[in-house]
Length: 316
Image (cartoon, rainbow, N blue to C red):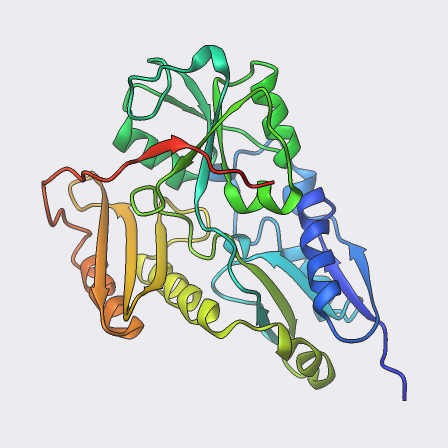
């Protein structure tokens, strides 16, 4: 008996299509990709921080899934609301790519002596509230300016001088093997520049009752990644924000322990970056939850000696 051709729903950007291709490549049996246009694709002039509701990049795809016009949906997990539509489930979480951000700088805006190597008052394309808050932590003089568009569009806006620099996910550039010349690329330390919950992860959503699809997706699920991003998304729920809140969380296994790193506005309006470590992910997550419920207070006034920004390692 031949397997049915599964329809994979995704956005139409180059990155979304590449992510759907990766899922199709791993998926047992035949499949085809269907492009679904979302609110995020239609209303490109609305800054992310000003969008109404949640699911700006996912709602229409979920609606197509519920209507059975597609069989599964591929998302960047960081864009997917923590509360899924009734009847849907996260059927597969692919192994995480790197969770860090990259800072791309125009050569004429570089200033090597600064911790973030930009000239004073530089204009940085950064729509996410988390990125804006972190910029303020490390360089109060920089101007965090709204930016919309897919990866190539944002890179081109910096190339053409609309911005002195832009901040992008390393995973997105790596998946596209996208070259950014003549911009200068710098890695931002993920231990100090905390990523968005679920950043660097491709997620596959399916109908909860569609056993055939769930079985075909089971082999794509990476259990350790699922455990870590489940903790990150739970912390976002504890914080009380959506996927565009000024909140960062990164959970990972390191040697025999687990680390949970969180970035959030503190109870005195300062933005805090804190690390929690324990013998189990559950214990580290509980420490972070207690800190969030306490109002994200400053635990230590000591300045970290770790690097924040350095020339990027190759990604393509």
